[in-house]
Image 1 (tube, rainbow, N blue to C red):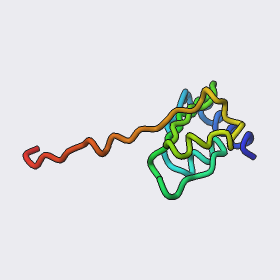
Image 2 (image 1 turned 120 degrees about the vertical axis):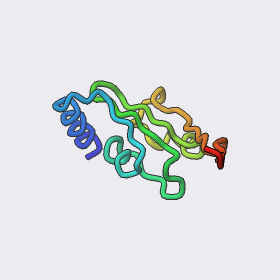
Image 3 (image 1 turned 90 degrees about the horizontal axis):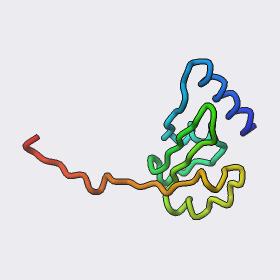
Image 4 (image 1 turned 180 degrees about the vertical axis):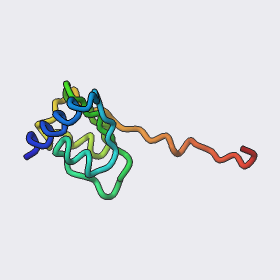
Length: 94
């Protein structure tokens, strides 16, 4: 089912002239890659899904360390996700 979904998504992307999609929702990442979601840390993972290439997956450190559990994703496709929201500051005068 994982390969069928990825193939279907790639076909739709090619048909519509879309070279890549940046996925951030758990359900979209799961559909495109077959990777299970992480309900406790939504928004900390991303997937750049290509019509013609292997996807690139940014995963938070805890799941990145477990990447061997998903052998269908090539080792060179993994990246550690970073969240920079903690460094953002609110300026009341803006």
